[in-house]
Image (cartoon, rainbow, N blue to C red; front, side):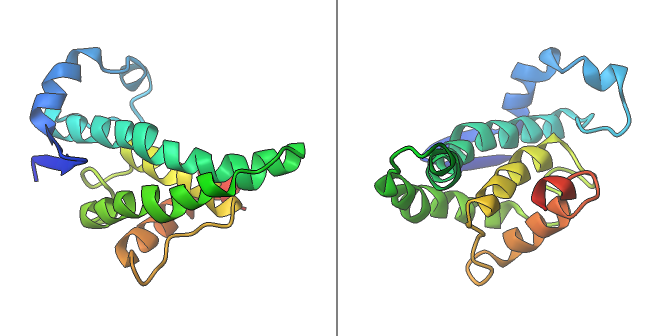
Length: 160
């Protein structure tokens, strides 16, 4: 799949990649192993898309839940249950529906762990702390994928 559509906006991974290819993180050249940044332009564009998706869409919904169920609770601040309900019932489901269609293997991009996997999986570690885990019946592939990624030795400590 070379393009995707979410929120009525279409993205071509190759077009996205051409716009950011020259702006690659120099760390990937300095520290090539593990290679978290794909080398092909199309895979790189797809990785950038998932990083931005996690930041702009998934992270926004995650923050509504975590801020109210964890941070504000710890601070003794008033909670906003409407914001949590909005995130859980309206914001997250279409995002998770989308991710369910994109999980077609062990990783989101290529055949190795990449920044895309880290960017998408980490918000779910925070959501789990806030007592939210995607429903395995509605999102079985996503649920299994998140388990594989978050159970990796390098990430398991943020989950436990």
